[in-house]
Image 1 (spheres, rainbow, N blue to C red):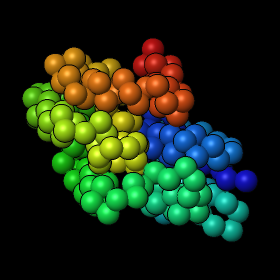
Image 2: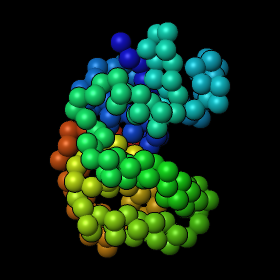
Image 3: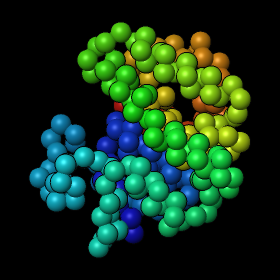
Length: 192
């Protein structure tokens, strides 16, 4: 049985929860208090971060690595497109994720003006003008990589996503998926 060391408020953990739900992989959750991390967590991940995936003899930290591992271990349904160009776009989205997350965290934790994050949202919006998903024609790991931050952005940064029509439509499509709908419920619960 897979155990996920998790924190409901952590968008990196949300990536793994969404992927596990998409693939209908059963798992147990151990909730970690991020304000009071248990000492034993550092045995699972020396930097003390979540998520951590635990399969008994195999322990794996870091959301992107966990996502790639689960995609290879449980290939159905596939979350990497079959077309090489779209697969490359998935990898490019991961490669450029920090361009999005850095402004997000500066706004959320440092109280910086939201304009720099809004500019990154505008870039995503523009990318979605030509395709229904972040890496092309089908839902993929790229969408899972970004959606946890997008669903938290309005509540955490007070940005109006309504002015980004393509991004809003993308979020609407994703919200119809059970995996993302479940994450929206978690975000609503922690935002109250």
